[in-house]
Length: 99
Image (spheres, rainbow, N blue to C red):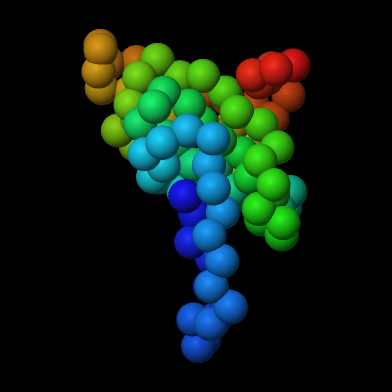
């Protein structure tokens, strides 16, 4: 779940559901208006930052340890510690679930 609140008063609170549990490591792509949440249930979720609509879901090898979005080059990097250390770099054009 993503909790959204209006600044500076933290009012207008809204909860955006994610299709995968254990979301953390939220990053933002300001130029495209997208949020990226890596989830413990082995998924990277892309969310429209204006509406909260899920726009893509990519599988990853396991629960994420850390994520990083690189605005200069475009990919979201996800480091996964278990089952074995691996890294997944995802670009917007990569196929997602259901595509």
